[in-house]
View 1 (tube, rainbow, N blue to C red):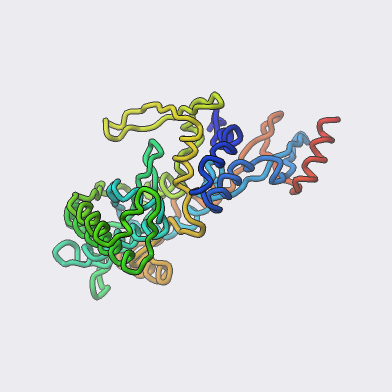
View 2 (cartoon, rainbow, N blue to C red):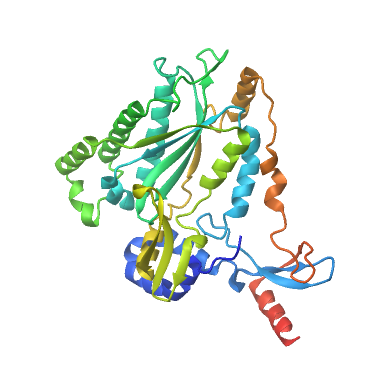
Length: 391
């Protein structure tokens, strides 16, 4: 893939100080740390290493990456490593894709309570899937699934939702057989929507009683119990959106799908089209109007505000596994599942473990694969650059 014309780091270099000065009150240490990491990523500030061509002897200096999970430039290798770890866990059955979304009226509450609200989004969606799947009227099975949190829409506005990848079926109650789904969309969407809404609102009430919610700025009035109860009634009257797709292919297709969703950040550098120092133009997909490709232009500070609101709390886990795929029992359960399905794990050829460690670039002179050499600190790098410049 060609180098992007504009990067988020370019916008931070040009307007980052101004943005931070205007928004310091809500950014906090974690957001500032991530923005600083993106700014320094693949620059001399983080040091680097010497790349050598074993064929012609050409040498070049490469800067180190920040390796921050929210940096647009640092996700490719992290994604490959994660996929390599997951490929032997994929079962030889079709997989379903289910998406749980909360109403936009909850967005202000998310902004001031991201850890509580996003954690509740995981908990409520997982409890809903496990509950409905266990019901003999729908499936009558113990299922397992992987959940991935996204907090953004294509226009960078707040749009919290969870993507779930679910193997088609699950264990019978006595674990003697694999129960296959009876619906083309795995489980009835309307039932999922109602139960999800109930689970989430009940969780909000519990968080309010336990004083785990913060109310500042435009939502300060919700700290009053009657106002909060009225707010929850309004939200509960709505139809909550749960979206499901029919089953998609086997292990290779599943890993390709996961690779698209697991390590995304709010916007990739390749969607940025132009930046004049003050305004940024980027490409976005308008799902409300037939997924048309559109362009949007924002001031640099507004773009950074939208980007920064998707920086997650420190240590918050945004990829989680539930049911028989939960961490504490996953290996044993996968063995049982494969026995019931009479399959053996076969690593998909398209996502072999070595795929994440292929050379990232080749010698510009002879085309041979460059080999990474000695690491250099920022000071050593500055000295070596002076040597290259003088030679």
